[in-house]
Amino acid sequence: MLENYNLACAIHRHFMATPEAPAVVCQGRSLTYSQLAERSARLAACLTHSLDWARRDGQPPRVGIFASRGVDACVALLGACWAGATYVPISLKQPEERILNLFAQCGLSALITDDQGAKLLSERVLAACPDVVIHAGQERLWPRDSVIKIIEMATLPPVTPEEPVNMAASDTAYIIFTSGTTGVPKGVMISTGSARHYVSMIAEWLELRASDRALETCELSFDFSIHNMFSTWEVGAALHILPATTVMNAVKFARNSELTIWNSVPSLAGMLRQIKALAPESLANLRVTVFGGEQLPASTVTAWQSAAPNSVIFNLYGPTEATVFCLAQTVANPLLLTPGRDVLAIGKPLPGNEARVVDESGQTIADGASGELVIAGEQLADGYLGAPELTASRFPTLDGKRWYRTGDLALRDATGSFHCLGRIDNQVKVLGYRVELEEIDAHLRIVSGADIVGSVAWPQAGGMASGIVSFVGASSIDAEQVIDALKNRLPPYMLPSRIITLEIMPLNSSGKVDRRALLKLLGTEAG
Ligand code: AMP
Image 1 (cartoon, rainbow, N blue to C red):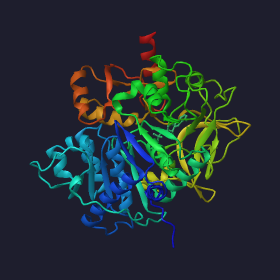
Image 2 (image 1 turned 180 degrees about the vertical axis):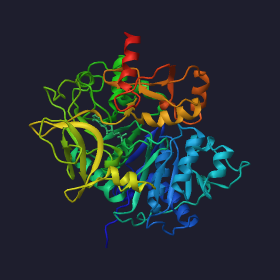
Image 3 (image 1 turned 60 degrees about the horizontal axis):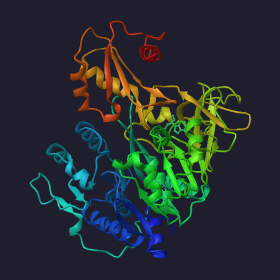
């Protein structure tokens, strides 16, 4: 029989072997593997009966997950997987316009919500919903007057979980949307083959165990969540979800939950350090710390080593387009730092991945010289949804092999370790979120009416940005009004905190807005 690549197979496996082991815990609610399997399979049975399973472009139907991190969100996405569908997480933290855009791009066959998601289904969003909408939350929100019928999961009959529907390695497991330079988010399509490779590889590489208790800090729409959920479930361990409202108390949460595995962006650790929550030995139970998704400052590592003295620290690097992480450094003393910067090297390719530094023509360049980091291997995405040209340009064939051009400026040192030196383009990370500054500019141009605009990530401290400041080349605009109008178009982390008007916008030699000069202006102002 062909191997079943369905991501939900791990839940079924542990349901059979250790049904009473805890699988997911959040805000006082917890599900064992048996309960998680039953609920996911129940949801899957409903999808199986309600959807048209005819394949489009050879791919399974797509099911949107409109939920914030929590037990019900896990059931929702596992239900979609279990049924053999592609799941598409849709962040709740975005304005209606953007949600409608994602619906339109995906052609969803069904939508599953939790309580929070269900409450955000305005009449306009409901009108754009697919025919099948399932509420997998705890509150009884329907029947209520709405333009479409919503299925309450609580009314579905219980089932005995059978093995998840067979999925081939080439079936799309999920689509994650990231910021797009044209002003429209782009959907990264990851196959079950890539996802399954990543999950089994990383669980083995990190030596995760069934007795582990691992932290989830991410929303489903961030690729890091794939790592957190599925690496934990791969080994039959328990996932402890940090509620968004408890982030400041993450250390206390980790202690009370007796966590052994920490997973987060370094920004979270940096913030805990800033609020002086990282007392020495305060995280003594941790045995593994996974930092990833953005540069890891040396200062964060030093503070963490004293707070979590029994933990190995890993710096993991990777774009959504390479499933989750594809390079890694096991942190050791003395720290392997990137020359001239106080940040950790991103290490070497993980099993099944390859990395090179290339020049503009795709030729590999000598160790020590900087160029663009390109990635190949089993984790590469199938491309961007509905964007074959963009896919072709970002996933070129070099020497007969398919690569992904990361847009990261990098070098490889003499020991074979890679170092990230920043971006070639205008992509930034703001509080861990991936943002294309051009996407902000595209919307700013429309709402301000100005032709020349430029946004930068600011303020920056310890190599991390915590906000956006935009500049408009116009004599006068009402900044408050423009920011208000942007709120209907962009998620909160992409909104400028200030809009500064400049009579003369600095331009670089190619006639484009000079973002470095804009940053200098802000630096002078702060200094
Ligand atoms: P995302 O697709 O949201 O995971 O963002 C991917 C981008 O984040 C990469 O192309 C890098 O620019 C950055 N990034 C991810 N991990 C690291 C890391 N460990 N160190 C430095 N930059 C990172």
